[in-house]
Image 1: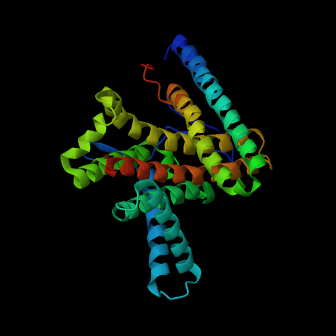
Image 2: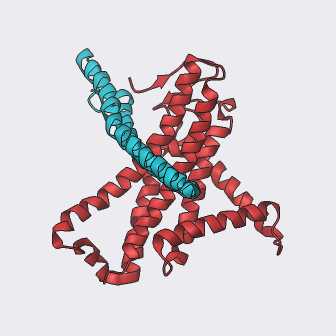
Image 3: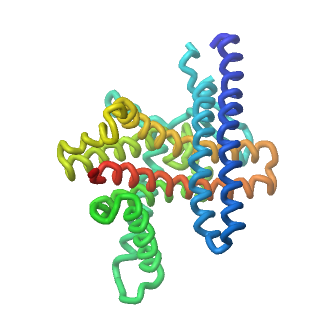
Amino acid sequence: MDSITTAASVVAAGLAVGLGAIGPGIGQGSAAQGAVEGIARQPEAEGKIRGTLLLSFAFMESLTIYGLVVALVLLFANPFAG
Amino acid sequence: MGSLSFAFPFAELEVGQHLYWEFGNFRLHGQVFMTSWIVIGALLALVVVGTRKMERDPRGVQNLLEFLWDYIRDLARTQIGEKAYRDWMPFIGTLFLFIFVSNWGGALVPWKLIHLPSGELGAPTADINTTVALALLVSLSYFYAGLSRKGLRYFEYYVHPTPIMLPFKIVEDFTKPLSLSFRLFGNILADELVVAVLVFLVPLVLPIPVMFLGLFTSAIQALIFATLAAYYIGEAVEEHH
C-alpha cells in the first residue's frame, strides 16, 4: 500500500467513527431525557422504561458500530491496499 | 497491513488472522468452527441434562430451561403474534441461545490458554461469516414464513399502504440482513477490541468494568438479534385488512 492510501485510510477510519458517533450521541441523549421524564412522572413504571430504553440504546449504538465496521475494514481489510 | 497484533502477554489480539482449513477450493476459518461446535455441544449438553429426569416441581437445570422457555415464548408471542408464534419459537430460541452463549463464551472462557498455530479462539459471532450466515437464515425464514402462510398474497406486503412503497420495501429486504449481521459482528468485535486495547494500555483493574459492560452489551445484542428476527417474521405473517 502506498503512503497516500495509508494516510487517507487512517484519516477516513477516524472520521468514520467520529462522525458516526454524533448522531447516536444526540439520539441517546434525547432518549435518556424522555426516560428520565417518564420515570419522574411515573416511578412505578421504572422497570419497563429501563428495558425499553436499553433496547433502543442498543439500536442507536449500532449506528456508530456501522462506522466502526467501516473503520475496521479500512484498517485491516482495505480493498484499495493493492 | 492486513492484520494487527498487540504483543503483550495478557492482551494478544489478532484481527484478520485465521486458522485456515482447506476443503477443495474452500478456505474455512477453523477457529470459528471449533468454538461454534463447543458452544453447540454445551447447549446440547445443557438441554439433555435438563430434560432427562423431569419433575412436576422443576429444580436446578430444568428450572433454568423452563425460565428460558417462558422468556423465549414471550419474546416470540409479542413480536410474531398469537397465531403463528408456535411455529417460529424454536427458531427464535435457537438463534437467541446460540448467539447469547457464543457472546458470553467468547468473553468468559479463557481461550487464550489454548494456542493455535494461527489466529485465536474467541466468540464465533466476532467473525463476519457467522453473523452473515445467521442473518441470511433470518431472511430465508421470513420469506418462507410469509409465503407458506399467505401464499402469493405475501407480496401484497410490498405494496401495502401504497405502491409507492415498493422500491423501499425491496431495498429493505437487502438492508435487513446487512444491518442484522453488521450490528452483531461490530458489537462483539468492538467489545473484544476495547478490552484488548485497555488491557494493553492499563493492564490492572481498569479493564474489569469495561468487561462487565461488554458482557451486558453481548447479552443485549443476542436479545436484539432474536427480537428483530421475530419482528421480521411477524411482519411477514401479519394479515392486512
